Image: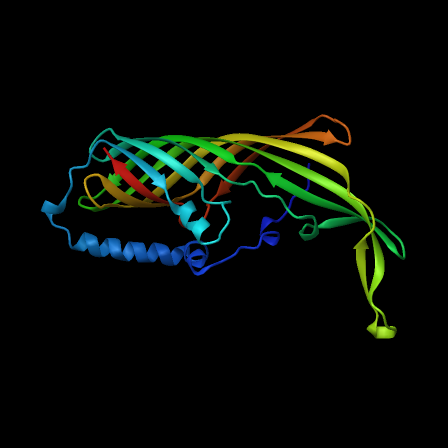
Length: 276
């Protein structure tokens, strides 16, 4: 089983004002959207109700806001969902998405193990991991509550996903030396790299799984052809994880099964909806 890394301790987010708005304070974004939607709903009359077409495409724009805000794309995911209305308030959903998990931990920001040590030398083993993109395919049902421009919706998707990761360990010697010359308490010491890095272990993980994702949200019909939606929810999934040991020599596979529960932030999806 490869090592595990705490991603939060190895990433630095460049947070601009827009980044804080979308990444750090999603609750504020949700409350502002809810407030304006409620005002619009209170002002509606029956003659402002649009005749909604049976088909629509919904594209999640939240990742674009995160990129513009200087955040990383670990979550949420880009998604494109096709919806076909079966009845007035019931729709079939089919779509796909991708999460960009392609991050590599830096050696000097990663944890290390001390393999061997004496008075002047230290043999360290550093670890890093690289996660690839995670495609996801889903289908489900969506039910809409209410009438008019602003409505609530809820439902659930069944989904399948696949991801791949590489885990690598490398060793190198470090030499203890003085940083500033002096004596007594003024002497400072620091370890400096004294050899090249050499790969000590390498493991590849392939993970495939599926599950169910209940959701609920709010949608606003801007016109008969364009609308917006705000969605949250959680994932409950089962996955099969296959670890292949590649280096120092091929030594077979380790197979694990896991069940996970996750909620990728309060706001997972802010979509533009094109109806036709």
